[in-house]
Image: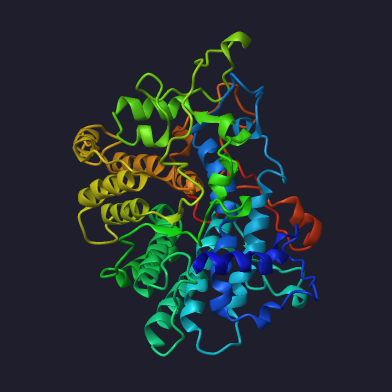
Length: 501
């Protein structure tokens, strides 16, 4: 039933496929959004908003984190922008355009005039917070208060990034209040493509989002340069002492299938055609040497789930290397994506994995913001990552957890300094997130903690001394909203408001 409902609604939300997220043209043959009740709109709103995360953010995150390289034995690859950092206003602008445009569907639910849909509104608020946090993290100041007003404001002004963060936290509080305080609201059921209407899990999701919002600001608070943020975090963490965070993977699946190309899981559909033929994207991207070396040297049980093995190990290519016939050193056979990353048309999409939730908690405990056992949370996160990727050899998992905890910067126990413990948490976060459609989360976290410059760049060199801390506003904004686009400064030296390095 869920699959049928979603396929029907894909057509209704086709208006969101235009290039300009401010486009409000209406087709007389389609119903207006104001005519659609939130229960009929929810699944399509959730699914359409996820597109940029599952593809654009995953590709960029894995390339910026040096997790993936190119199959230089089969493709003529020179020095792409992800390696050279020659970014401009067209660089990955789909992240902005798709996210801004498609989250309007969530705003329509939030602003519904239909009564008794408070729980649907709560879910839409939580989902919108999820995407708008990424926009702030990746761009800084964004249109927020006046976004999604259509013809009422086709050139929305920009809000200060920190103020957006503060409001996102308040939106999560409001969502939880709607869940708890509206017992007579219309129940949520299979139209919810994430938890199937389990509102207790949505409260966990909201609390985990709160934790993520707060932890993003932790280095700024501890830098001694922002006393307001320091006080704000202390106040908010005090309210989370007894909170329950995600205890399961938060996955989105509206009924993905191999019925048609547009009903496949979007990431899988980028990698494989309906008949199982590999696409150019699947054949072009391989494991990086850095990633392979980390997985092999630690006997990581996730290795053969993340990548195919060549001679029993992951074989990767250095970013910027060339095939041997072209004077390079790339191995003749490279590891492709494994079954933990691409398993089939109906595979789940991941919004927040249990592993990420546990690692967020581990860091919060380590920094003294929350009570608990950081080591236990750290170990549980590795177990959750293995479970999510389909690792079944429990003895191997246990051996890995014991072994990795003897390696400073990769295991929590062996890391003697606070900085090393943070590095270990981030190392495990990168391994866990590179297979969950949200690899850009790892890049943002490495940038937030100052560890991004420890990730080696392309051996071809770059046009800048380091990776950008955020992206440039897209060309589409300068075309449609140029009067309001703020001066952005140097994105290679300054990040979003929480950037403290």
